[in-house]
Length: 476
Image 1 (tube, rainbow, N blue to C red):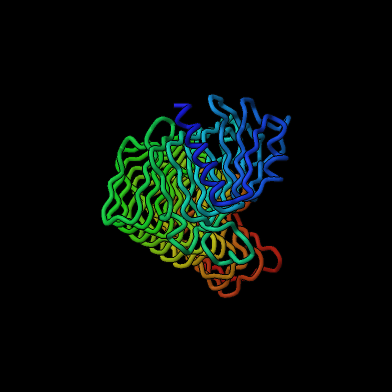
Image 2: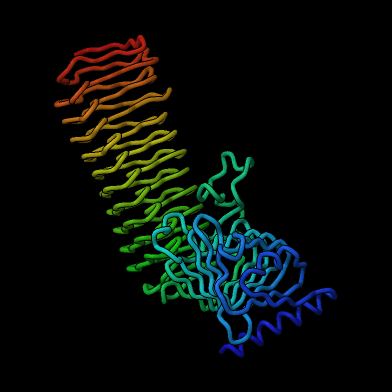
């Protein structure tokens, strides 16, 4: 096998020489890789000798600004071992080839910004699980025609994305704080991914199909620009993004698990119509994450011990029903969407049970929120009907603020550690029929612009506290 791989590397060198008269071959050992890639030019081949290339002898990331080839010397197994917080290899040039290397990382393995990259016969692994959060084996950031062949990923995987976030990204859906989702499906569909594994299981990649069913034994799933997508009973835990589905319609994901993923467990972007049923994520950065999509339902889903639990960003007509989130940072998060609903859901021991930001026409009803340490429901500048919910033992039960109309009605609020209902700058809102009991400090506290807001028929255990000259109509 080593001889075959060496012949592949020799073939690459011959092809490079044929295309570039001045291409050179460099043989490096630990301590000389950084300098060599800095001086290399298009078409050069850099052959790594046995040894560990780490922060004691190299500077990271290893930055490739020319279309070079990195490969292992015949019969040898060099290791690139990157330190925390930085990528092992940053690819800025088009046409880079990386073959037969062992790449270990503590944030990102390959940070790829160049088109026509080839990664072949490589082993890419998370070096230390302590650095799992936000970790990724390969980020492809706004590139086309990458090829991954016969690569093995351990506790990581490939994440496909649009261009890096920049000043021009304003109002464009972003995948994370690093990359846009991308307005071109080609960022997801133009690649070749064959014979790769994640944690010993198949890395499944499907694009441009009218109907696709993913195998239940896949270790990572990437699907783009497909219709009638079916994924059932699949465990994609311990990957970077366990499941990434983009530019698809009619998506059905049932009884799938995505625990301990570095970035997202199950991620849908730019999809129209679909449902996630009884899917779960534990110990992942973002558990179930839906972005820039429409008509997506989460039914009976779970998130536990995640930084973000169930996440909607720029989602139209989304639904979360009969879901449960516990011990997360943000339990249920919504931002920038419209006409979404949360019904009959639970948020237990989160920081914010619900964090609703700049949404339009949201309905939240029949939910139970308990022991959330900041807010049970944080309603930020969102046109919300918040009705028929029960909150117990939260620090602040409802915090509503921002210049929109709120309807907060018929809720039961018990034993708030600070305040039952905190209102700020919510003119022309309606607060009625709520029962507030056992608040440690105030039942209701209001400040800022409150003109036209009506409090009616609420049952409260303490007087309403008005700050900063807040004035509104109260009928009890």
